[in-house]
Image 1 (cartoon, rainbow over the protein chains, first blue to last red):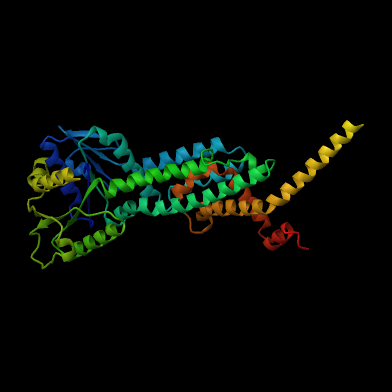
Image 2: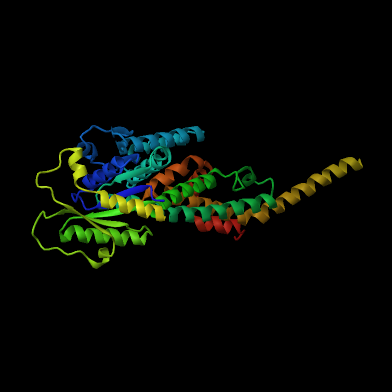
Length: 308
Length: 93
């Protein structure tokens, strides 16, 4: 069953607005909902007219919200790794390795991983207390990077696991032939080898996240009535298909914002379309968010969820 | 006298067997160290500009790689003359 929804799209198309309207529609129809912002430049709290942090806060009955604190996740993770490293290494090599930690938070990919850990935490720790979780995502580039991480990292982990198996096989052979070899003192069995065990646990975590994105989530792409956002949505769809993640719906937001000609592409045209008119007066309250009319999208989400 | 002789003989046979065992596993040991060195290089390659897994994966594995890191450092010393190491192990003069 779908119990998670992601809203993707080009910057400024209205991801936060529509994800809030969608979450409010679910909540006001009696579902217990958590909405979480993954955007490092959060504005979920602004849209819901409340201040938010990394833990769920009740916005109204049935609706809780949080803004993922990526810096906190990066720091927590690096602290854990540092503690593990200090506990494991017995000589002053640690001093040299420890100096890397200060710069690792700026290492490419760390922020995307922090986002994955945050999603995992929400999925495993918080989601069981709710009927549905709605994610407001950052603009396309960052979203695609974290959505693709389970698949890409999975390839690395699979190759490293194969190499590790080869190493353990060689160690076993040497130990059998020469029990007094120093190799015999190292780990020779898969069950004893901590590196092999760690690779297994990383693979399990990545598989669970991959399954969450590809099988248990409803992914909706948002476009505006302009060709640029449509072309970007098309690229999102192509990239997601490569990763085996299906798109569930297209939301055309800000209908009537301009008279410029635009065209929905055939590749997106076959997906269920949901239209939302541009509000000239602006949207400043939660009731105005509800007035956008996300009920039809919500009904489709609930029906699709039952089919799964 | 015969007990003493038997003890010496046992020790000689044991040493001889161990020498043969060391010889038999020498090649495998070399291959194992190479594999462990490659594993460590793959994990830590990012630090020296080699293609490597995403750094958070490396970070998770690093605390358990003491043996591989030691081999990596030892291999660095030998990297000036890899052919010499190989020919030495194969007993080629």
